[in-house]
Amino acid sequence: MSLAQAAHSGRLSVLQARSVETGSIATMPARSMASSGEGSLSTAMQAAQNGDAAAYRTLLRDCVPVISAMARAKGVQGPSIDDVVQDTLLTIHRARASYDPARPFLPWLRAIVQRRAIDAMRHASRRPREVHDRIAYEARADDGPLPGHDLDVRDRRRMVAEAVAHLPPGQREAIEHIALRELSLDEASLLTGRTKTALKVNFHRALKALRASLSSSKEGSDV
Amino acid sequence: MSDPASHERLVEELARSLAPIRRLPGPGWRALVWSSAVLALGLLLLPLSDAAALQARLGVPDLRYAALGAILTSLAAAFAAFQSSVPGRSRAWALLPIPPLVLWIGVSGLGCLRAWLAPASNLAETGEMRGCFVFLMGVSLPLSVLLAMMLRRACPLNPSLTAALGGLAVAAAAAALLVPFHPHDATATDLAVHLAAVLIVVGLNGLLGGRFLEGTTGRRSVATAADTDP
Image (cartoon, rainbow over all chains, first blue to last red; front, side, top):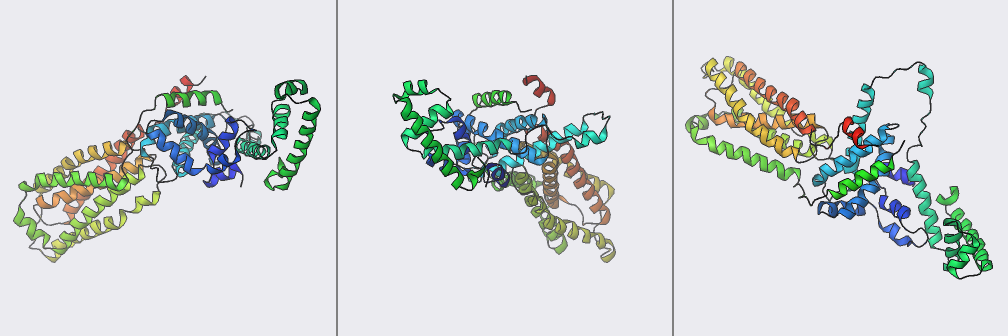
């Protein structure tokens, strides 16, 4: 199941996606990603209720792409999505006392997002709009990314991060410096203390291993 | 399109202003607290009632069931209102007060037949009916205010529904509190007066309460959004 699908079905592991984005992509243990999910969100919200600002900050950041995906799925388009995201964040803040940690977090969040999405669409429909070419206007494709695009990107990053984490240390080091940080062979050699030849060999072996591991998994075939 | 910088700023601002907050008790518990306040008000008013007449009136089955219906409607509507004030709870809870409401209205409607079936019944006079109306309104006001304050502490995403359910809870509670003071048996006109009072209370709660509760959900105006966004 992709992350975007999970966001819609309520089984999203948002913290999982977030940790990929912020953490060191090559050194992050794969286990920590698998253990997070709905429970982590509930725990983070509970911590926020107790006044833990760091947990609250992380939670809100993690919620942003989810809110955005939910709003798109509800039919909100264009700049209104940002309004929905911000209104939802404010509502989460205002309503945080009403969250019961014994219950899952995402249905609580979804109810708020849906209400704010409806508000945004009502507001947009009240705004006067002059349309000269009606058919062209209605047939125009939305410029923005598809619903769940950001989440799909994060999902792919997560899979690459998992594959990189499973490489032997030498190969992981080569991939990290040459491919991910885009360092030259000279710079990477200076940093790691390995010869350029060793780095090249490790790099090519790592690429081969990654190609094999990503194409072997069904989800990884489109990476 | 997406504006991550302004989201990040807002997240930072909200995290900075975070203070520990006491978790709200469950809707059942809060409904119980409000119902206790209704009970307390009833006990406070009890010395003013005519106990012998009350006993006699409760001996009549349809009046007894109407009182029971009003009490159950009040409890169910209060519970449903508190449920609807919490995000993510099923909207089906709004249907909970319907069965007791049917009992209450249905059995009260039987009183309409009383004028024909038992012509000797003690029928209401205009002055008494006005008294009932004033009582219902007078009792509804403090109960509405208390309920609205309690509902406001949660996050009613559908303020009009929450407020209408609250209005029903208040109207039913007022009708139940009226029972010990009701000077006469039910008639069609009496029922109409009560119904009008109930509809006024529900309507006012839905209208005013909806606006009152809407201001609590953290929605900001577009102007505010435009000010804070770059």
